[in-house]
Amino acid sequence: MTTEAQRKFYENSKMWGKKRPETVLERARLTAKAVPSDAHRVLEVGSGDGLIIKALRKAGHDPVALDISQSALKHIQSSKLVQATGNQLPFPSNSFDLVLACELLEHLPVSIYQDVLDEIARVTKRYIIITVPYQEKLEWNYARCPVCGCIFNGAYHVRSFGERDMKFLFRKIECINLKGIVKLPHPDRTISLELFIRHRLAREYLYTGPSITCPVCLSTVDKRPRRNWIGWIASGMRNFYRMIYRKKIPLWYLAVYEKQ
Ligand SMILES: [Zn+2]
Image (cartoon, rainbow, N blue to C red; front, top):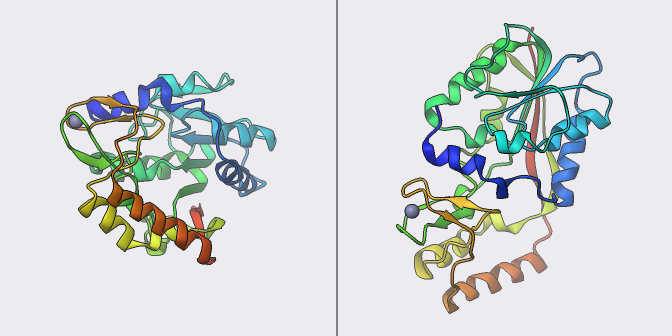
């Protein structure tokens, strides 16, 4: 089960139906493109407001959308909607040719993480597609609750994935393709010094979401925190790095698994 804070976070209507940046739309297109041609019955677990469902439909598929959030599912125009949690999928074993979970795993509390993976492995007959943020630095999205002072990842990401994690995600199902997608010059993830200045010296936690919910006091916070001059130095440093640092880093992993 998810916590009360998580329920509030995912039911918050401000979370859903937003216009997505081009990078996110590109991820959705690449995910739809990775669907094997012999996958006909398709399920997405954690479909949110239907970003991937839309891309799949555009590519000619007719997927089932499953999410815990009623408020998210309202945005999807489809008759195949299921409100359920990923750790108890209401389907018999081997019901789908393909199960997708996109930007889901990094959100899962430790109490249900393995159960969700096991359920995905159970209901797929053949393929699984997973996307997660690429080697994410969780502290990049730290937010601080202005009411109780709790510091947490504002996007509710609780887990970061490396190459090995992705390759061996499922106990008995082999990874047949793993790649980094949507590459950008992205120095942000490499600058520990900036995070040190911002968090430790400026005490500045800038993530405000589309909307965030404090996991401790359940306050929902929308307004940006007040800035201070030390934090501005950190921002200046980041902008300077952005100008000179051209190495491209993927934003996401896309992995395809196949049951043997
Ligand atoms: Zn709080």
